[in-house]
Amino acid sequence: MDTLLIGHAEIERVLTTVGRDALMDRIIERLTKGLTELGQRARELSPARSGFEREHPTRGVLEWMPHYDSGQGITIKTVAYSPENPRLFGLPTIVSTLARYDGDTGRLLVLADGNVLTALRTGATSAVASSLLARPESTVVGLIGAGAQAVTQLHALTRTFPVERVLVWDVRKENAARLAARTAFLGVPITVAPPDVILARADIISTATSTGVGEPPVLPYGDHQEHLHINAIGSDLVGKTELPRRLLREAFICPDHPEQALREGECQQLAGDDVARGAIGPSLGELCAFTSQAVAHRDRLTVFDSTGFALEDHLALDVLLEIADELGLGSRAELETRPHDAFDPYSISRE
Image 1: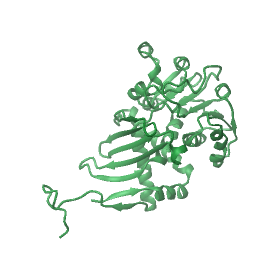
Image 2: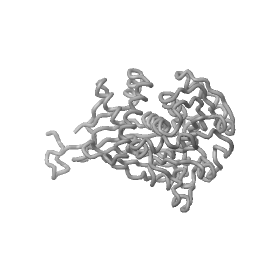
Image 3: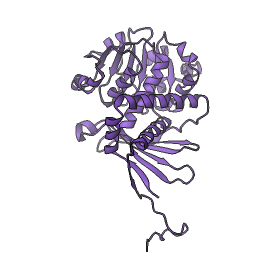
Image 4: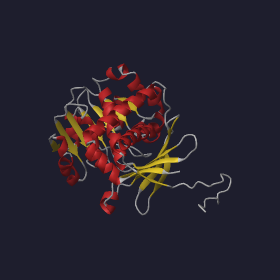
């Protein structure tokens, strides 16, 4: 019983052989199809993620995100959010691993790096939501937060919209200044600007920050384009939010995973009466399946409440496995024992 291993070397080969653009395009296409099937009830919604928080030696969370796809196996992602990683250890803020299991036997089929796929699928999901809710002719993108996720957010949006200008802000000014170098492959001019200017001028904004629990919004309330669309990415803990509640109450809100969004997304800011009066709109899957519901809101303020769920990872892993098969990538290891007698765990000797 061997397991396919896809690690750093294989991910690097995929990026250099297939290319960033083609890989992003394939993931956007697969997510669009899979989320549409979810909205049509041809797929099951993943369970809400679970995990635990830690304060020492550094604050963060470790979570597990499962998805079962009948006939297509089980995917479980473990993901750690550690905002001090870049500063203290030189590691990404998000570190994750993906495992694919056989749905009939429970056998571990694949173990893969999840760092790059998590960034790609999050950016791709924002592109899917934006393609539904933002004006197709949107040219100005605003980024609040200039970390790793800003790269794939912008990349995905440039694959979907005719982006001509990018405005960025980060509490760490050096991060904002360096974003232009990290996204030079996109050929889009980037200007550092304060949040109120970004709010006023952008057609699409993505917020992806490491703001703390209970801290003020990273985006102010104020003048904005009537058709502004916001991808709210960074709210992923109870009490951690990025947008002003007043702005949310004026917007058409699309959650990716309604239960999860109410617990730890931007939607957690909405009280019971807000929910009762329909402040939260259809899910992303439902909008993918019934696009007219989204198009009707393109001329008003819209918010995509993105908390991330395991179906997205399951679909992105499918793309990676297809490419690995095309290129003959991956090594195999016998990680699970197979006794000669299924009823005797000691009968693993080759003698």
